[in-house]
Structure formats: C-alpha cells, structure tokens
Image (cartoon, rainbow, N blue to C red; front, side, top):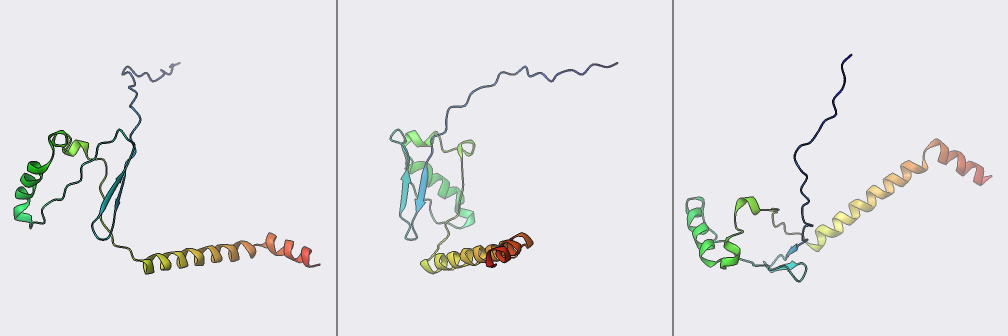
Length: 126
C-alpha cells in the first residue's frame, strides 16, 4: 500500500502590503487628472510625438525631464497598467444606453414567455 504524501511548501509566504489605488482620468482635450490618497505622489509627463526611428530620442527626452524621484521607478518592472485613449462622445453614450435598454427588454420578454410565467399569468387572469 502506498501512502499519499501531503504537499508541503518550504517557502515562507510573504504578505504583500495593500496596494494604493490610483485613478487616472483623461479628457478628450488631453487634460489629465490623477486621483489617489494623500500619501500618493504623482508626476504627469508628455512623451515626444516621434516616428519610430526617433523613439530613442523620445526616451532620452523623457529621462531628461523626469524629476529624480520618478526616474528610479520608470522601469518596465514597475509598469502596472496600460491603456489607450479612446474618444467617446455623448452620442456614443446615448447609443450605448439604448443598446443596454434593448437587451434588458429582450431579457424581460424572454423571462415572461417561460411556461411557468405563462401559467402564472393565466392563473392571475382568472
């Protein structure tokens, strides 16, 4: 008879400190807002708008304008999220809401047309 061995972990678990939440809001006109707790220190910089062969120049420019305290965190290992600026208009939002309402109506119709719902409506009618 073979006995099963319980898996063991020899490495100690390290507790990670709670993450500081940060919200970055980008406006269509390029205005940027950073929200976070008081202990958060934020720096907003603009990259140069360059073609592919000049990306090294853009990196050098960024390194030259970053405050010293932020240069030490500007490394790929510290990148936490990426995103793309997408311009959305009020018309886009109205269309999105219309589509959501349409989906809700379709779901309610589907739910009302189940055999149990039909039988319940017949009993209520009389």
